[in-house]
Length: 177
Image 1 (tube, helix red, strand yellow):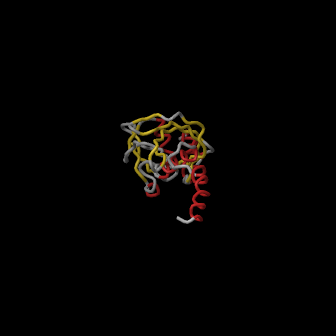
Image 2 (cartoon, one colour; image 1 turned 90 degrees about the horizontal axis):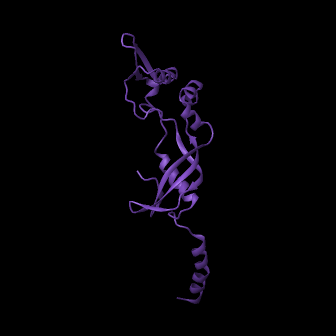
């Protein structure tokens, strides 16, 4: 090895040792990267456990579902003899059915994280984060839908707070499934 090569290595070594951090180091930017990668493919949805056609006699559910009818996402028939409303997916609702997802989270800041602990062989932390919703469809912003689904309204209007567990892996931080 020539003198110039040795000199170049000596000059680069302090930069490499102090300027680099691994994707798996426990830093807030790495936590945000892990959260946002997770949320890219996991949207927030209104109806996680509903299958269509859906029947209900619950007044609160009827009021909520009727807002989706008004938004032309569902169609409604009423069975007066048994006091049941039956909902099916309208043509305009097929894009969102059956769960009626209204966007995905983008984590903006880590408010806190717990000290690392080992769970199932992985170092983990529990984080509290702030997020905003992205790619919210027009129907989810209608006044009727916002009023009928207050939890969704709170999430899509401004910044919200959430919590998650993050596990340290060789490729970065991930939300364990």
